[in-house]
Image (cartoon, rainbow, N blue to C red; front, top):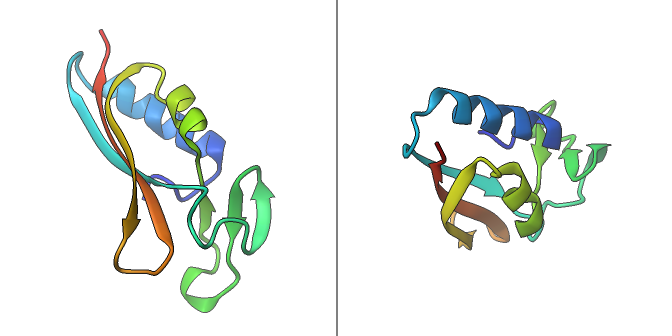
Length: 104
């Protein structure tokens, strides 16, 4: 659940992952897309970050990214795949699927 938090939180998490991975190690992660049906819904707590005030999601911020933002956040990695996919478990659920290799 790397996208639970603000954009800054996501950047720090990816930075820590980069730090602990060896050069040429692979990262596989999914991140919410700004095309997701829930983007913009709820209380905005930071840029592109919202909290939906419902019982099942109360208190969980969700950060949403576009392609340009992800490329910037993954600056220490070589992107091998970056694809946006619709998830079947929830209508309108769009996620980025990322496979990247840590640079030396």
